[in-house]
Length: 209
Ligand SMILES: [Ca+2]
Ligand SMILES: [Ca+2]
Ligand SMILES: [Ca+2]
Ligand SMILES: [Ca+2]
Image (cartoon, protein in one colour):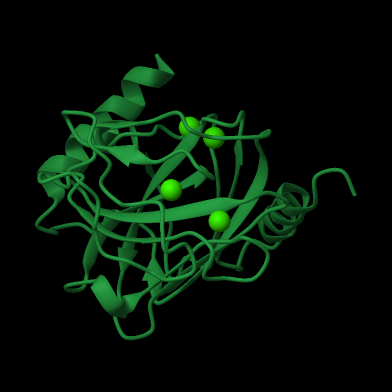
């Protein structure tokens, strides 16, 4: 199969659209999700968000999505793709929380609840190894190793706030899927992040114009 992950998600979405009473649990990347908090793609829907499907259009593409972690204890995000992925978790303002590179089978990244402070809206980012997040002075937020352990920020950055990516990807891009546990769509009305989300939504509208 040429595009297994995306095809799977598109098939699910089509089936669900045909059954009016069914509630969708997937988000499929619309265009190309941005790579900074202000251009993150907002997942919208009702109920549980079980997976996101998208595509890294080249080795240095990064896709960021807003998700809501509703059940911290159950939370887990696991990437699957025919290439080497990295997953990162940030607050809505880009404060770095956690990353996983090789802690799931097949060179895939996984993030669990261990560095999630509370229920709320967060940003999840996927990149191809070894395209890494840097702060405003281009310092790495996470070290490159150890690769097989989920880690809180441990790099030379003292800010730990996402400002850019180091374009260190290798190989080609491709389709990916991120499977979730403990998550719902974003945003949630009345959340503390309403202002930031307003900015995200406004940005989304502008990009459509
Ligand atoms: Ca993309
Ligand atoms: Ca992107
Ligand atoms: Ca990896
Ligand atoms: Ca890295």
